[in-house]
Image (cartoon, rainbow, N blue to C red; front, side, top):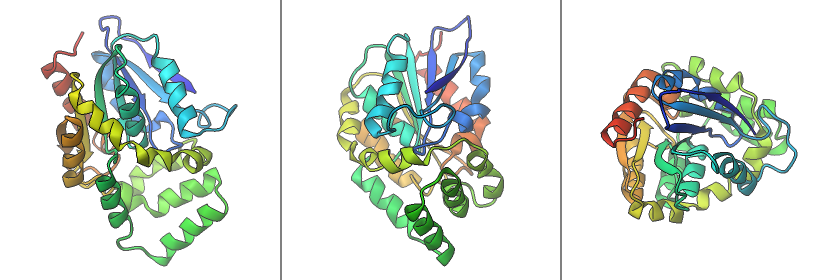
Length: 263
């Protein structure tokens, strides 16, 4: 794993960004750089994206590298997107004393959320979608992984701007092996979400108004299950933080300020 750190000498709060996929880098978080005016920022690139794979990128190994990274960092607010949000929930549910807040963006965790996601995924399937999914299954390469995302771009981004939005994936250094090895276990963490409800730290769930992976009604269920505040970003799809960075930045600042997580 590699980390890009942007320090703010006036803040003791460390926002640690955990990317999704599995197998995407922190590229989609870069539009949130303005948060460095208030906080220290840590953009994590998981193994296999901007660094070589020295071990298998299983769910456990991907989780371990995050845990080891934050172990000695004080005042951590974990900020995870999609798969990264599931990891952030998993880690935070262990009640680590240095984690003072949790922000999750578009992460399906419960069986209900995965059921909704799968139903939406099967809507409007074309032969092109079926063919690229089979191609990825037969020959899971990084480039075909990008092709797969491109074919499903309207599922992950606001359809009106998806041709531009998808560049954050096609321009990325992805790791399809992480997807192959880690995706299944990530769907078994409902108990982690449930255990968070009694944890007395600020918790924020964000989703896009147009998110088909975790639509607002599904996000409401996840937020209630884990005891999160819920915010919906208008006109955004699954990558709400990338598609609507200004709104996401203000949402995060407002929430952390309200909860007293500032300096």
